[in-house]
Amino acid sequence: MVAFGSSYAIASLGCSIGPFLAVVVSAFRTGSSPATGIALFVTYAAGMVLVVGIVALAVALADVSLVRALRRAGPVINRLGGALLVVAGLYVAWYGWFEIRVFNNAGTTDPVIDAAARIQTALSGWLSNLGPSAVVIAFAVLLAAAITTAVLVGLKRAETTGVSRDRDMHESR
Image 1 (cartoon, rainbow, N blue to C red):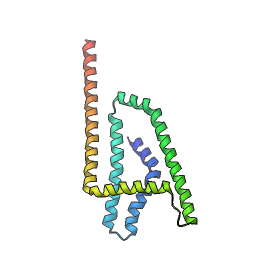
Image 2 (cartoon, rainbow, N blue to C red):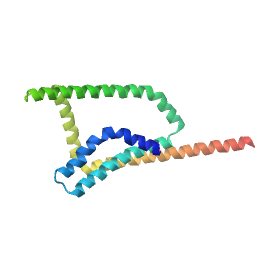
Image 3 (spheres, helix red, strand yellow):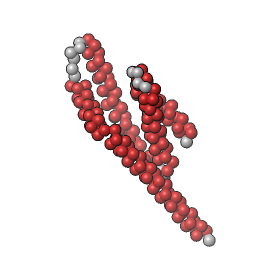
Image 4 (cartoon, one colour):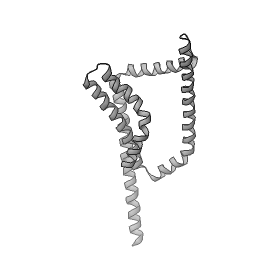
């Protein structure tokens, strides 16, 4: 578990340091109170702990048949992940090209960038309309579902292991 956590932390640092610095450091630089900055830091850390904790718990309690099924699905998941990375990379390249055009001509518009901005605005507005309490409740429900699933898988695993031990003991007599 320590090795898993350490390697995950090091690997995810490249992806998470940007948003972390943008959120937490900007709170300190904009004149917000230290309590606000500390609260943002704790919230960010709690989110990371939640993700890593659920993944670690799922791996620890995974049923052998589930692991086999995931291994069989691996090639498909890898291809889907690769396709998603290609699409994201194309968008980043397109956005870079757009920024160069904007730098040269301030009146530049782009249908791809405008569509992405509309989607982002719609999602942001939807979350804003829900309010923080609804988002917290949704995350709490997801966390409860993840914990419940992990416990049920663990109980099923213990039950299956206990049954096979009883059967082995009975057959050896």
